[in-house]
Image 1 (tube, rainbow, N blue to C red):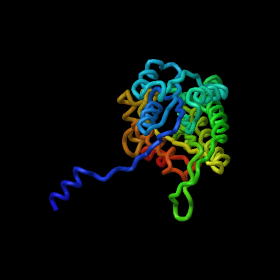
Image 2: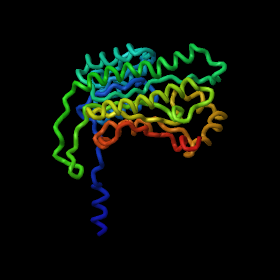
Image 3: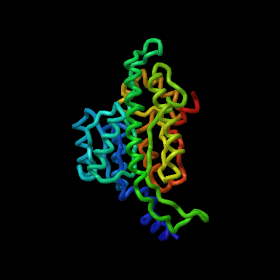
Image 4: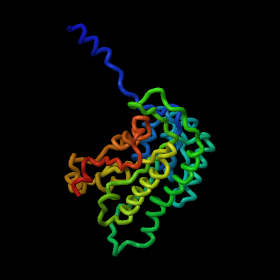
Length: 286
């Protein structure tokens, strides 16, 4: 019995693989934060990845080199502030890789200085909506148009009960925020933009799921990234924020990238139009 136990320890049962082998993904805002973690995880899962960046060229090219080089992990410099910007990024990806299975719209801005509605400038409002909503429309407009032309593979011989498992024609994952569900005082522009992303996800699902394209949304809560460093890198601010999160800390970027990956695998083949909350329980506590 002891030898048998030792043998089981030395030869553990194989784990479950979340594979994206043979798939091509576009991840926006991929040079840092949640985006970079998602690029790394998708490459580990076997996908070819194009990712956008705006100004962090050194980080972007270092990430590409880390993940196998331009032939499998292509950095694309692209501002994202208009629908046309989003369309251009999809076009560049298709030109480089010839196909697109997965779109992850991760980019966005969160003005770190609080501004009440009474004090917020129209320019700030427009800039936030342009980046967080308008460019996302361009991305999904172009990506969906391409995905609808892709053939859907034959049904698997494996079945779920009596239902043949159908391969997806494409996956769209939009990144929203807990702020889009409960609001955020001092950041009405950001919360409104993320609420729009949630509504867009549901609309895309209604339109595209019958065609085998599954649209879902990941809604992170507080996550420690470069963008939120103004909060979590200052002990006094972190001490005020952490108690508002039931798990007592901000999320790690890998804890957001993991659910994004899952939603693009066959294990999520019956999920569409969902808002996947990844926030340490914070969305429930107000």
